[in-house]
Image 1: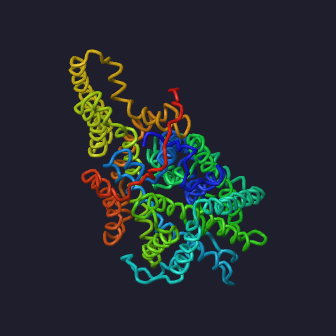
Image 2: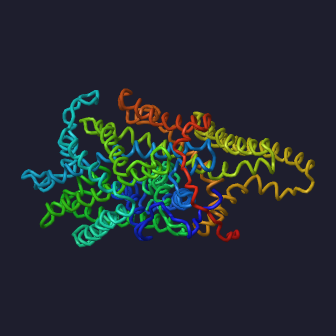
Image 3: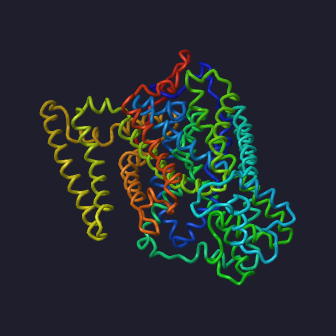
Length: 624
């Protein structure tokens, strides 16, 4: 497709958002979820208070936002889901789209069970022995109740293998998937309307919780712990702060799952993709930031009542949202109602994230000739019911162990998908034109030089035993190998210049380093508005190497027992947990590389363009 502007005289058969606000609510609803409430505030506390915002904002501006812009813009330009988008860039890249929707599918099967556990906790709060509203109960007690009774872990043995199915959670999981089905089965306009409620009400409830929390005695102590007690030294003393910030951005923005590409494909032509992406990213981060105040102000009150320091409370993950926070709310007048409102807010935050994963699948399915004529309700039922079946393993008494393990390995899948998306856009887009201009030898040599030098540096950084020696060896290896590679490339370019004297060094260097990604920027600008030049640079030259380094860093991390986390995460048993986790990574890699080797393998999932629709080019946008 040469352009994404549909001629106004032709019928536009693709579903569209009813308004830009509907897109914002859906996209922000997809991005905002459990992690904004239970993970972000705890990361701020764990990593030096205000100091955490330096890596967090850096990861947002230089990695998360550019990928978000890329996904929304590509979806809007090609008017297709991920497989169609990357398959149009190059037939061998259909696997990139397959990887993203596979990543989202694997994640939503356990994410839905978080919603089931929330439903279980909500209805348990109506019982007379509601643990969260009992006197003198602690956050640790409530967390134990959640683990043992809601999840059902009390029957687990020392080997941590599943022993029973928690049928109540199976029922709540089924209820969750019925709701997801009803949210996606009737078209994107219906989905957009639903998000006014599923995203709008949690925003209102968050400010209600915040307003109540800051009036409580001891609230200021919690806020001080959250944001004012800044430890700047942690930026250098604890390098994991940087990878933690990137992981939070990936999960929080909802990128690498095919969601934002699908949502972008339903935007009208000429919608400003960069502006829309900024609104989504800023809204998501603001929700996280404000949620931290609501959480820690409430924890400050609970710490005052129990005579403890805030750091002694359960302030992260399940210990927060099913432990300390509801216990603190239970101490208020009408506490049981506050607890139920909390669970309602959590469920609504999660449900629009859950059905957004399904939209990524539906966008791909309905764009293909194979499934284009299948009724949306039928396709939605098939997707939701199969996802429900896959979620059953998380409804066992070992469901949390399965969830924790798969969630860890999904981090690697997300990094992989983010890396290959940027590689596809920054390096492969219009690569045929680049090869025609410079020759295949120069183009391939530049790719090998760039990624080979980073790979060598990672091997030295994480492969040598002496940390100080590894640091210096890695940088030396990086610069020396890159210099040697570039010297060879300039030699090849000199030969090319001898063959064609009209070529200039500046022109050839631009063709080599920026031409294809700037061509992408120009093409996208015709349909999605102005795209910053810095975005193009980040997508090609910054994000792929950084993701490669983060992937290696994650794989090199150690457990408390000294083993490598990859393959021994939390020292859970190898079978079935580590095996399943590793298989998720292997499965996604197979999807990608099988497409590279067999370009027609997923051709049936490529978007089929209606012949009667004509595409016209908009006025070209000059480079800024």
